[in-house]
Length: 252
Image 1 (spheres, rainbow, N blue to C red):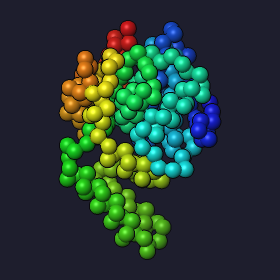
Image 2: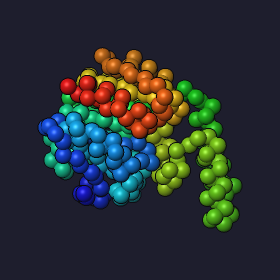
Image 3: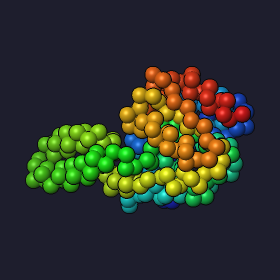
Image 4: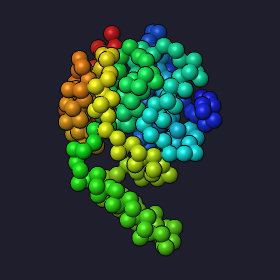
């Protein structure tokens, strides 16, 4: 399905659930609703699912300016208004989608009864050497590749970015937006959240390790933290049954 939101053509998926629970799902950086279709199908056992492709991802139009997390949060608010989603029982965010959810709830852009954060990003400064290297690599990649043919530029930048494990390659046209997002720490926003919250992390997650969950658990009053064994960053794929059961129990 498509809708125009803030002058952008936005794609989104829905699932009609077995009860009236309204679930808003926000995907991570470089992902889309299509990439989460199996998870969305499983969530429909709990209620109605709405999952937009965020601007610049999936089949949604890219924005004409650089975004911050707050810009994405405001977009999601506009999206919900446009499709007349007035009542949200449960917001589920994965990775960067979880960061957007935190920002949206903390700044009153969205309201929901409960919040689930899966592999939530947004904790900065725990690996300063890697963050500094990312900035150097980004600048260096642009400089040393500028006089080269397009094919060589792409391969060289790929090698440079991958050397620091950057997700920037997943959406290279959103480099400045990516840098805006990875420069923001959400611990202060997390402390403003006052709705029941469940944090789910994979024990083997290297992108957003369990220590992020521990930090958020301490910041979000009354939150619950679940660390799932034999699972990485995509817990909902690695351990789908465990993940769905946790969500089901929490949503009651």
